[in-house]
Length: 232
Image (cartoon, rainbow, N blue to C red; front, side, top):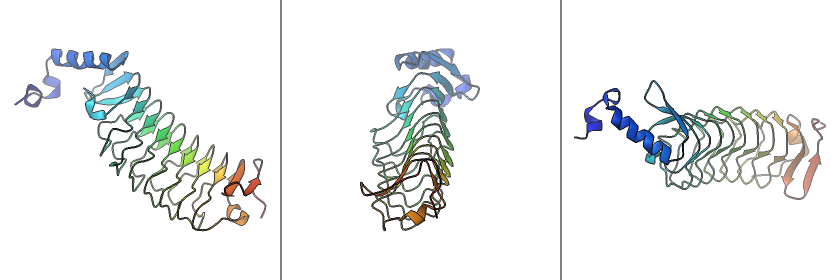
């Protein structure tokens, strides 16, 4: 039996903690603080597999990138990320369980094998990219997106559960949509939705306020809105 298994975390000798903190410095974290629950708050960014971390990071003041790590789960990821969070290009990742609850900038989970957005962060300060997955709806996504929202190249049959307000662009192309019911109420940038089960017309957008352009057929159907709702 290993010492770590024999003793509780609070009973571990200080030399054990010093060893973990030495590894933190080697990973490039210039500052760190041990929290009451035994996890850490760190300053700096990390790129790699969460399982390779010597400690449990709860809060990271920087970015966290675990893309292309052949992950099957997001266990070991921080609960709060001040910068960007990337977990893209993990073909065996089918769930966002373990993902941060809050991300200060971009959240990117594209090119995985996600079936659902359950466990996605409730707050994202930048872009939200969940394109190139196997989503059939958007249940679990944040309700407010302060950047772009890209859910293209999925198997979406409905936009149910998706964001209500998107500050920049909304992209839902290359899906199986035949209705824009449950689309965001407000999109500050472009609304791009070509290559779905049917070509959407101007009347389909009458309940959506779009700030810039609507593209329902790439390079053919554009309607410039200049921050005004579409005419009935």
